[in-house]
Amino acid sequence: MIIGVDASRAVAAQRTGTEGYAFFLIQALIPLAAARGHQLRLYFNQPPPDDFPDGRHVEQVVLPFPRLWTHWRLARELHGRPPDIFFTPAHVIPWSYRRPSVATVHDLGYHHYPEAHTQSQLWYLKWSTRLNGRLSRHLIADSRTTAADLIRFYGTPPEKITVVYPGTDPALEPIADPDAITPVLRRYGVHPPYLLYLSTLQPRKNLIRLIRAYVASGVPHQLVIAGKKGWLADPILDEIFHLELDVARRIILPGFVPEGDKAALLSGATALLYPSLYEGFGFPVVEAQQCGTPVLAANTSSLPEIAGDSALLIDPLDVAALADGIRRLTRDPLLRHELVEKGHENVRRFTWRETAARVLGVLETAVAPQPSR
Image: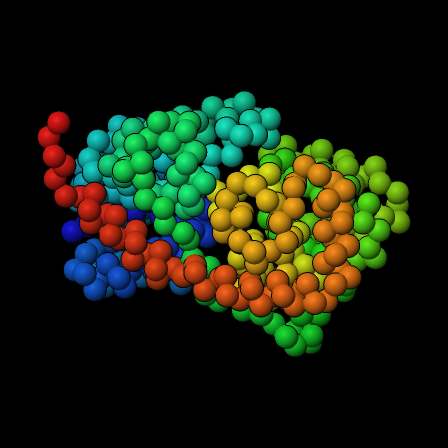
């Protein structure tokens, strides 16, 4: 069969969680689909880079268009030359498309924390999720938490949802050699010891409480808050601006960190701090564990499901508890060692080959004729 895939998010210049999901999943799908006699037809809104995953059973369809790409330009291509099934790993199904389709839903945090979004973003997120649920033959959720939210907020039948965990970046490995880490740290103005946050800067990530907990902990480490600015990020920057100067100087804001620098920043950190209020999966947690870095994470949403006992889980609303967790991680080498060992075991659960195999199974099932009602 021909599997059409919206690959527009996979070629984003700055890949974060959902863009990385699309990129690595497509990369893993190519050989598996070919081995089972399927062809992938990848739709792009811009030319993919020369090193983008390709193969004999892959057709790249570039549809450059400045606005309304999904609901006009992509829709026009799908109507004119429909695949056997259409899959969107990180976006939305075109509203006019009624042929067999499958979509991945990553998280519904906007229902739990609507104040962390602008009104326009909130409207679009609700509309696009409802559209995916209505048009798709099946939905993929990247955690049991997301699946439960689809049932709760949209009334999605449980049998229409399959939970498939994402994988982790296969190129992300721990770096033990300080000589390989130091040049990267120097480039960002970072020096050990330091604590690391690595994700988008937005309200849902709970960064204001993290900053207050860091200050309250009294640890001498730098706090590196790495990631691109997301929506409503200015209050986070204001929080730092109003700190005492000697404390503010120890908070480093490198901005977006490219893939090639992630391993060095993670490997050199004393710990990853990730007290996010809501996550559909939580890629930074498993990325840190992949690099041998202990993790402090929130005890909410999908994070206990993804991390289990391999991370120090804390109430993200309790600044004092977060501060205590920071002190424990910085002062207790036995705790750090235990979390590193458990983290190594935990990340073995998440491989893109397994993710791709399960997604392909969903697509093969969804394309079959549906029983009449």
